[in-house]
Amino acid sequence: MGMARWDPGHWAAYAGSTAGRSTASIFTGLKLNPALDPRLCGVRESRDSKENPASNAIIVALDVTGSMGMIADALARRGLGVLVQELLARKPVSDPHIMAMGVGDAWCDSAPLQVTQFEADIRIARQLEQIYLEHGGGCNDFESYNLPWYFAATRTAIDCFEKRGRKGYLFTVGDEPPPPLLLEGHVRRLMSSALQSDLSTPDLLAMVGRTYHVFHVIVEEGNYARHHLRDLTAKWTELLGQRVLRLADHTSLAEVVVSAIQVNEGVDVDTVARSWSGSTALVVKRAVSGLAMQHGAGSGGLVRL
Image 1 (cartoon, rainbow, N blue to C red):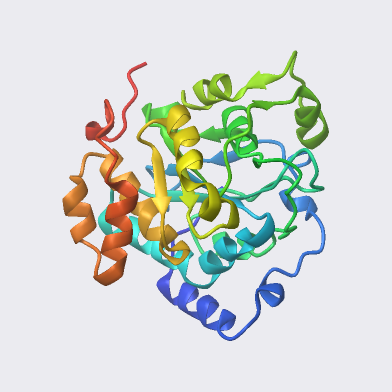
Image 2 (cartoon, rainbow, N blue to C red; image 1 turned 135 degrees about the vertical axis):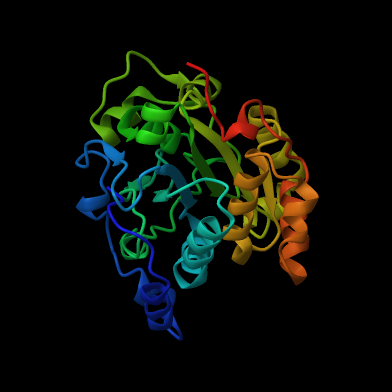
């Protein structure tokens, strides 16, 4: 997918249509939409086209449990426009294809993984609003942030990697710790896929890391993060190292994602932070200050095959 170009006018009209509306009036789904069901969707593709000849796959997987629906709400109202327009203007990667995911808890939620198509135009927003904000979770001290990793590793086909050896980008966003493992039974139930056994989260990270740069954004305004921030940060840092981004203001998620990609592609942290204005610059600097240019990323994230 992704066979179109971003039109700022289309976004302005869409964003204007959300003004003054409640979250429930934007995200109207009361159950998992079959179009976003990972059991039914097959493989999600990010393919080059005449409109996007050098596509780059970017996944933003949003926690939709508890109060975390505020992240999807902010993205639908403003963040998507910032995300795409700043990627196009700053060009840390070319021709961005965006996929959104909704993430819950595979132990107790009915829709713990929802996946849109990769898109490059206003259809990103139209599909985002189809995500069911279940507001579940709560039966343990983590959410299923590793489900997007498994889906990305096994159920996406991206030309940036297959044709050019460039990894895509995958950001999970939420306020709880990573789960310890991915259960074979969850994969079978949620994706109709077969695993020989459970997968540990570090093993799954190694799997998805072959084709994606993986980051996690800790939403510090979330209920769990407010009470356990030090322990939460330590657990994510043990798993992902520098690629843990602490987000102090959820309305600046798009700016943080763009900035993390810029830094990973070789732009200096201070230069990136100064490129934003006002309080956004402070939020970005806090989030990306621990990042360093990754091996190979200075040449566009190229992976030597």
